[in-house]
Length: 310
Ligand SMILES: [Zn+2]
Image (cartoon, rainbow, N blue to C red):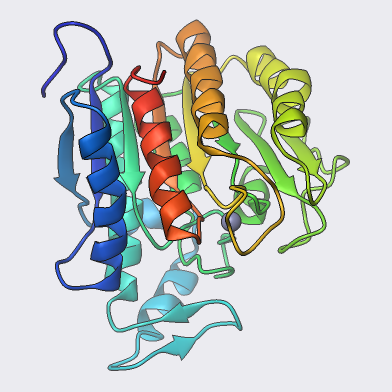
């Protein structure tokens, strides 16, 4: 694993680009920006397929079989008005979850300092028994359970700054005191969950933002609510649901963040991970629908993960 002899962290980036696809072009856009923006070494790996047993740690067997058997021979099939499957979606979803699991393995064993998974489909809307909002399997929740059950992490935190609330992650974590979920998101907005009063067993920390909010409200949500709660929780590993659709240019919401705001929150989470979790951070891509903003924001995030942010 390459590491920078001068400074910076050992970061692995996992993706599932396949040449000639729209997804490949989109991921290449992210990668080009990371590549040209900083010369620190990193390793890029293809995302492995998740083992079905890992998926079933969160999703019931009947659900996994329903998704697999829904796979169309050609064209698209719609699971709900937002969520389509192509002939390759099931494989892509297995690779997305597989990337998150592999990233946890790499970080928990100390092979790398942290990891970013440039994956689609996203995951945080997928509930244990329900696909939703472009999501088939909940990659970050599967990764959290893997960290706990396979690597012995006693307390696992997921922090989600996607502009939508991660209803699936919240549902998966709701009764578990050893799993923390903290989220900033616009309200009102899809999927409608994420109110302040939704607190699980004291392990759920929602910080809804108003349409039109920007840096000030975002920073305040983290400094006054999510980071203090995360500090008290004292995680063994910090997982990030990194959606970039709270960017000002994103067409799906009305939050007004810019690239430096994503770098800032990444640095805050790294700092918290240094204090409590041996610096262990695994980040997975969620939403982000303006491709220019997505590429620039992802670059800012990955640079921060590398310890290279300005
Ligand atoms: Zn989103």
